[in-house]
Length: 240
Image (tube, rainbow, N blue to C red; front, side, top):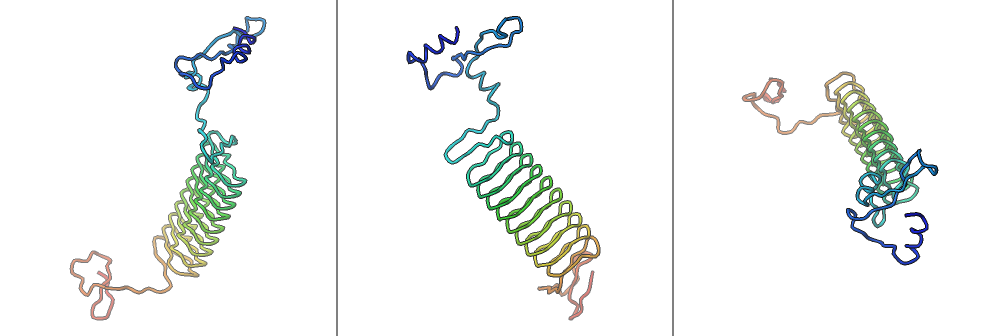
């Protein structure tokens, strides 16, 4: 078979749009340095061609645009979105970038997931730039250490390994496994320290910090309480 035969088949109407992939041969040129033209005519089944050549290319459907910047990366819709990391995804929104390996931006505007397995679910101007970091939403939040998380709010930073800021404003969790529930202008800089309130800076590890504390339904007897429990002894707080 030569190229002239191939062209004549098309002109004579023998071009088809569907075939049995296991019983249909596709013509191929096999590299052969012994030949003057460098190639030997051959054939491969359509199914073998799919299995060996078309590897991990997403199948487009309505509303899906496949972007080739990253291997197997996908931009589903929106405007000016980029999925440049291998296996990365931008589901929608505008000016979003998923540049890390397996990174995801769900939607929103100007969000960036730039490290491996990082995720920004939505919001705007949010950044997840360390491995397995997550920003769920809000505005101008940053998760920039491994396994760190910002739930939402405004201008919050989770910069400690496995740290969490659930919400609020201008909070920073920089200690290992530290956490801030909410509030504003808090800094959890000690390992495993936790803050509930505002304008608080942790100063020791494995402790919880609050502005004020109200304890409801305090036990009035120490019976059955484990060591370290607080109970009300006729108006005086006692510790077991």
